[in-house]
Figure 1 (tube, rainbow, N blue to C red):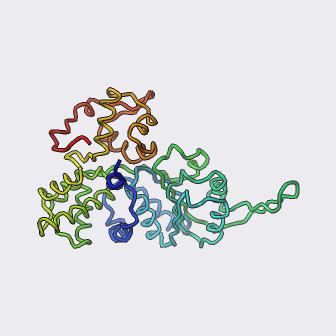
Figure 2: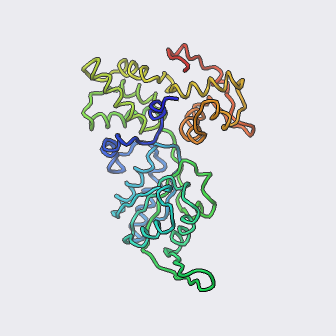
Figure 3: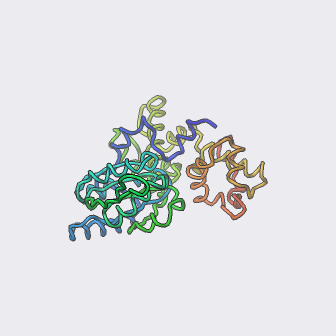
Length: 338
């Protein structure tokens, strides 16, 4: 499987994209497009915290990669007027890593932990008292001479982000007072995001061109911005003008993305279920072995969009194609199935 194609459909940022990613991030809630109910509820919580002059309640944001969890965390910190600290579950390997952060935070600080479901258990247990009582237990010595000292820390707000909310332990999940699920974006919302991004990148993009890219972006802003850059490259080389609907269609066809927004890997996944497993049901481990891909990649990157579009169903016995999945004719879309 070509890693470049996997990167294209993934919602995870690539290292070379980070400068542009930060440039394109909304700076205020007014610039944020989509997730209307989530935004409104967060605004209420922010305003209430400001009125009480307290730290805002802890927030858990869950949903597929690239939907704006990190952006929302930074906007919350900006709206509250507090420092913003960012880390991730895999980066906090030992309890001391988290203790070092918590003992140095200033009052009201927003601590953002991405991939919070990947926190090691000892680190997670430190969070329990930190989130609930704003204190951490420090243990001195070992064995029978062990002593525990409870250290008070400054009130803070934890914003956790996860693509796999089901993997969070119940004690950790229950300590988040605000839990919000981010939804995939509509093509119309993605069009608005793309038009704003085009202005920031100094790219001429028509309304029809933005809708064409948005329609093929898997409902994900990060992927939409990534595709905009690929279309920009194509137009600069072949057309030297504004991005129209037809030019966007040609550029995305070159990238292997069809009219439904399906990538080569999506089509390979569907074709494998259809031809190798007779439509399913099939377990994810079997699919991963057949496609020679990591199971977590299939679960986090490939499956969410196929489930959203109704091409795939998860059943107790495994994945199986729906009638829509069976009805896909890749040849009519003008794309090969592999």
